[in-house]
Length: 288
Image (cartoon, rainbow, N blue to C red; front, side):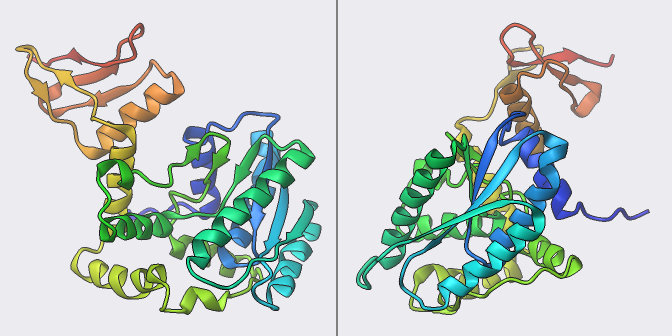
């Protein structure tokens, strides 16, 4: 019997609990734009805050570059009001010129950090998703980045969390449609003079034709390069056992959360566990 894929709500709930390490009592400030990604995350976080024991506020940043931006933030503010979420906004005065996207991103994070401090939020959330992460890996490759530079956009980095990072863009659009949530479309997301937009609309679709799981593969690559070398497990003759990608991910999640009860079944009836003292993976049993 074929099971249904997890909803966006379930994906975000699992990511918050297992990979963002969000604690009860945390106050999360979500950066919103009125676009689909941050709008969907606002809706999901509002529904999860009571269940997971955190509170959420929203803050929109108008870069002062497009007259439509204020109306787009009005959509986010209206949804925040409907959901009972506190909302604030700031307006910047960026000038058009070279490297505009990078300058806008840096200014946006400064504004969000300032807003988080003002309300005492301990965590800042952004709406990056799995497709964004795949695009960023490809952009870094195009610019000649090495292994260290490809470990991008982790689920958590300091006080910055990315609850949507395990969700596909299609999951987000499905959630918005299911709940009939209004959102804005930023025309700059279709402007192909930006390299990221060309990667999104030209390169990534081509790669998906050649390898339908390319987004998942690029995200797994980022995970592996971010985490460093894979855990080493030795067999009875001190030879290393090659773990699969999902097994490596399970070991790392257990190590990060301090779990001791991990059990992974390997080929040949053997099982893997975490040593209770060192938290390193060890071969537990072998079927005779």
